[in-house]
Each structure stands twice: as structure tokens, then as C-alpha cells.
Amino acid sequence: MPAHRLGRITVPALLLALVLPLIQACSRSADAQGGPPPAMPVSVAPAVQRPVTDLETFSGRLEAAEFVELRARVGGTIEKVHFTDGASVAAGALLFSIDPRPFEAEVARAESQVVAAKSRAELAQTELARAQKLLESRAVSRQEFDQLSAGARTSDADIKAAEAALRVARLNLAYTAVRAPIAGRLSRANVTAGNLVNEQVVLTTIAATNRVHAYFDGSEQTFLRVRAAGSAKPVVRMGLANESGYPHQGTLDFIDNRLNPQTGAIRLRASFDNRDGRFVPGLAVRLTMTTSAPYQATLVPERAIGTDQNRKTVVVVGADGQPQFRVVQLGPLQDGMRVVLGDAVKPGENVVVEGLQRIMPGVPVQPQVLKVDEKGMPVFPPPAAPQQAGK
Image (cartoon, rainbow, N blue to C red; front, side, top):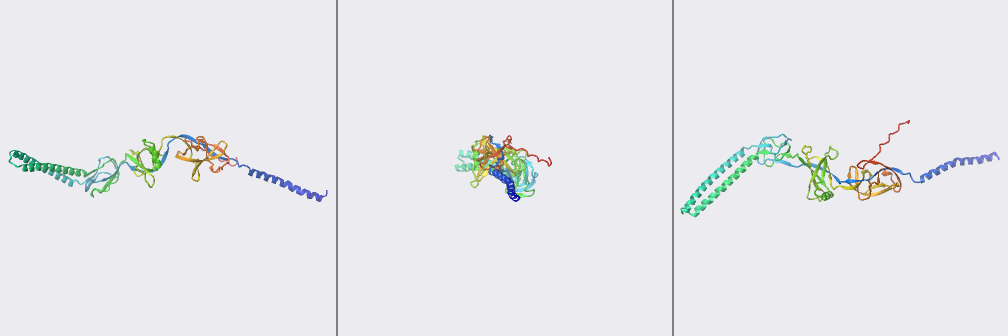
């Protein structure tokens, strides 16, 4: 065969030998892309069942169980202040002294009126006795005797009026010593010695410290659940702003007699012991209250809850790896676990807690079952340490 014909045949064969492997490689790549996608790994944890009690959280504010605005009962000049601002006092402790001299003079005048009334009454009784004897001998008329009898009775009434005026005078004199009506902690003295005061002036305030009340607002559902619980007083736990959790325990001791029609809320009150003086009226507090009797419930980790528009969902992975989206109705949150009401999720079913964004409907996943702690919360394995270069 001529050389020029051999060259024309060899070149196309060589080009075909080079292009054919590339075409086969592209075909294999296309086949790989057109096949089913690999199963994506997701972390799952089993739903748990345990007895729970419904808990609700609230924000409240502390108030003293007893609070008194101390005012003078009589007008006068402050003679002396007997306490230090902010001190704790017992009931009956002397706090202010009002100048007693005008009231002492009034007591003396009332005493003299009592003596004068008794003297007049004695004279009236003597005249009545004399007239009684003269009436028997017809020496006086019946009219004169009746007048003397009325005068004796009037004298007795004058004695009672004078004695009542004396009691009022002595009471006003006692009010010049202003005493603490309750035990508690004092505020500052609003007036000092030398000031003229009357019944309108607030001298100081006293807040009882042995107990405090936490007032908070609950919803209509809260009210109905508490009422359905019966006569047992719900336990209320409280935490301050600088505390974690709810370390202080009290009881619900008051529910208002009506709901606010504008807000649908009702005022509630819990009582707490404060003998150590830790709580101060006016503090903002966090509260949690039990609103039901214990019942068996199914719980899933809070992080397993997803949102589909206005619905709450969880993804359950079966033994075949197929993800199942289920609409759930949520109950209270307890220790990071959410109560799932109804039978949408059964105890022991695996719910996705990590990797929700990698799930597509109808596409199987590769579940990695996590261990859970005593509360049912998933325990994630520690992250792998990065490998050093050169190893």
C-alpha cells in the first residue's frame, strides 16, 4: 500500500482511540448523576415516656405581706424621733413622740368635769330622797317630785358623758406616743423633731419582713387548670435575677375574683417565707408553678420540633430509614424536653434532633441513634480532634 494512503488511514484511527475513553468516562459520570442520591446522615434520639406535671413560668414582683403608712392620730409638734432610718422594729416599739402638754391639760379638764358631774348627781339624789319623804306626807306636789326625779337621772347621764370625754382625752394623750403597729423594717423618717404634723402627714412606712407575696398574672387556661386541680394549693417556685433556676419554694394562696376582660388575665399571688430577710418588696422575680396532677406523657427534645407555616412538626425515622413528617400538638417544656400531646409520636420512636435541613420527602436517611441522659436529652459525641499535618 502506498505510504500516502497509510497515513490517511492511521490518523483517524488514532483520533478515535483517544476520544473513545473520554466518551465512556462522560457516560459513566452521567449514569452516576442520574441515579438515586446517597442517604444523608442525621442524628436521632428516641422519644421517652415518663410521669410529668404541667409547669408554667411567669414574671412577677414582690410585695410585703403587710405594709403600713404610719400617720399621727393627733395633731401636734414632733418632740423626738426614737429610731434609726431603715431599722428593724418590733410591734409596739416607740417611734415618734408628739408634744403631750396640750393633751395632758385636756385630761385634767375632763377629770374635773367628772368630779363636778358626780357632785351634782349626789346633790340631786339627796334632794330626791327628801322629796320622797315629803311626798308621802303630801308636803310636796307630785309635779315637784317628778322634776326632782328627772334632775337625778340627768345628773347620772352627765356623769357618763364626762367620763366618756375623759376617756377620749386620755386616748388622745396616749396617741402622742406613736408606736409601730406591726413588726418589720422601717423606711426613713419623713419628719424630724420640731415639725408640726396632723393626721394627713405620713411619718414613715413599715414593711413586714417575715413573709412576702409574689404577684403575677395568669391566663384563662392557667386559671381553669388550677381550679380543676381541686383544693390542693399548687407549689410555686421562685428565682431572683441573680439566681439560676428556682431555688425558693412557696404556695399559691390567692386567686382574684375576676379576669381582666381586656387582657384575659387573672391576678395570682404566691406566699414565701422571708424570716431571713433575703427578699425586699419591689424585686422582680421569675416564677414557675405546677398546674396539674402527675400524668404519663411522651416527650421529645425541644430541638426536634420544627415549624411548617403555623404547624409544629417532628420528623420520625423508621427502620427503613424513611423520614416521616408528623404534625404534633405541644405541651409544656420541662428540662429541655417538650411534651407531645396525643398519639402523633409513640415512646421509643426515633425523632431527628440534628440534620433536619438535610431531609427531603421520600429520600431515605442514614440515622445515627444518640444516647440519652436520665431526662431523655440526647448526648452528642465529642467532636473529633483535628489531625496534625504530616501524620
